[in-house]
Image (cartoon, rainbow, N blue to C red; front, side, top):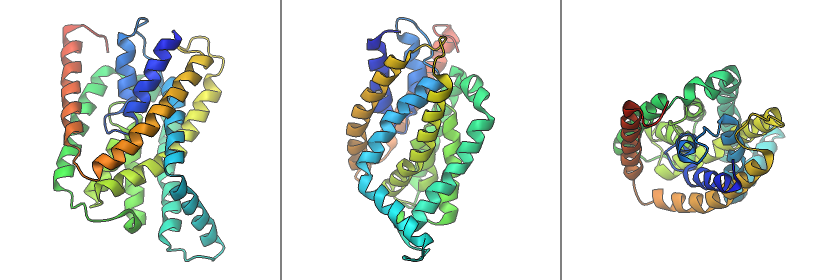
Length: 275
């Protein structure tokens, strides 16, 4: 594949990673309409997510460093173990375990069966509707400082669903946060923090295991370029998204997900694209 295609896919990754529309689904779909008409693959998706998660590190740097510092201080007793930031540190650790275990156990299925466009279309619609319902009925009262161990673990379990393209990491975790009564901003903030260790571990693992794979659609240079583009675009998007959800609902994303899922089903049914 050409560098221009890698740049385009990096742009798509950065644009969609933080929105509840599924970046992995979009990379899977747009890859079919590029000149080589190939699925970029789960490995390419995981590695380019390193770029967007680096954007999270920078955007939330003060939050992350404070949480890490307070977590270490809680171990030595310098701060109470029930300190909100120390608790967030534990919740990020505990919430990462489920997706790590399931990701390793189902790696082959994730890279093959789960990438079927029929599955992508169905979950785009299904989880889009779920997000819309929860956005309407959720109490949206609790702040991130009120995050409990039970709530954090449930959101961590919801993150596992992101292994299926079309679900959306932010969509699944934010939906669970809304169901538990957290504000949109609090749910999104915790979702982004929770994703950092999972995405970095997955990205580095895929980078190590796919290095030198001559059958991969993208080479090392192309993937690195796409990752850099994803970082730049992702940083802009995350700032805009956090500002947006502090004032508005998720409904535009719900409508988009449902519409995209329906279009996919029509194209698949007509044989225009293959699953």
